[in-house]
Length: 230
Image: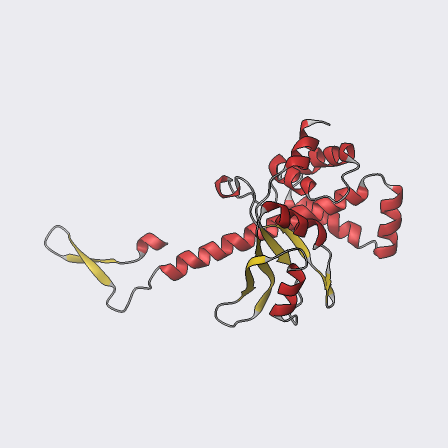
């Protein structure tokens, strides 16, 4: 077993998972009950727009430990809820907070590829997993989306035939979906943090000059509070 396969097998993950593709008509209790099929849920946050209350189709679920979160990624991913299959991936990964956010056309990197490999259900083909991991690490989000769209546009029956006759294609497509779900989780978490920063920054009132700065000639220039929050 090479170093990549070993890392994929031993990867320690966050205990918070991202659950996406949630049907908008699903009740909150239905979603939570589905998550609790894996184990006790410590916290559950079904995302909704703060102004309209409209659901966003994803949730963040915290489990008791890394092992339960990994189990959710393996066993809840693809679980059918009403008319949709849930997409489940890690909400946070080791070093994610320190990692520079990548654009749509930059490689996803080996770290994320290894995390995606750690969630693959078939542990009997580690050599294939390792090979696919190396290849996908150099692909961008844009390329991953194109690959998945091309595959899914073949239709369910043709997809089944392709995975039977093309060695490793099933693993590759599963990892592509995992990587895209991880990217979606990163985007959702980043947007939530951005909104939190904005909401914590009080808007300037009509009289906004909280501080006054004297310039040459004694003219007072207003310095508005809150500029540091931008």
